[in-house]
Structures are given as structure tokens and as C-alpha cells.
Image: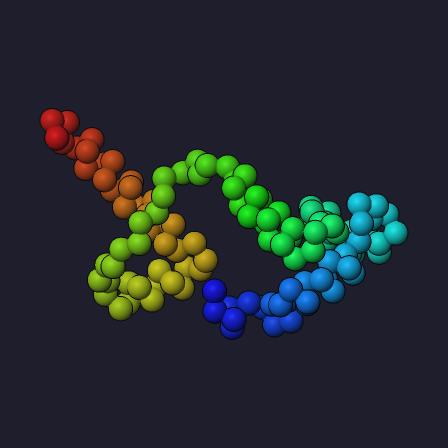
Length: 117
């Protein structure tokens, strides 16, 4: 991973991680201010084992991810008129998902129009 891909101030060395681990709250988070409780609510704090233990816990968390319920999206290149693309992007976040839904709807209507196909 490129070093500039991490957020500013993100720990990059084992020494920096040790400082973060030492400053992290323990299992009892009742003493935290309310705004911090929400932040730490789903955190898994690994105090023992240092940096290698944190890396292992992160890797384990990635393995536990559930399988995807929707089919995978496949990136493609498609050529659209400039005004069409501008209008799609102007429709806001999720425009690619909406295009996918429109193409799916069109395919289903084509299938219904040609029963033998």
C-alpha cells in the first residue's frame, strides 16, 4: 500500500502503533465521554501482543466477512454522449447503480417481447 494512501496521522510504524494501543480504552468504556463511546462501540482492543497482534486481529476480521448477497459488479468501459454522461452524473450519487437498473429493466422487457429467445 502506498504510504500516501493512508489518512494523515495514521500510524505507520510499529512504534506509532504501540502508542495508539497504549492509549486505547480497555473493555470497560463507561468512563469515556458520550461522543467517544460511539466511536469505540465496535472496536476490538488488543492490548497484549503489540503491533503483530493488531495485524493478526485485523486479518482475522477480514476473513470473517460474510459472502456477498448480490452478484459482483464487473468494471467495463462504455462510450456515452457527453450530455448523457453529464446528466447521469448530475443526478447524484448512485448514478451508476441506476444505470445498471435501467439496463436490467430494458433487458427484461426485451426478453419478454421475444418469448422464444
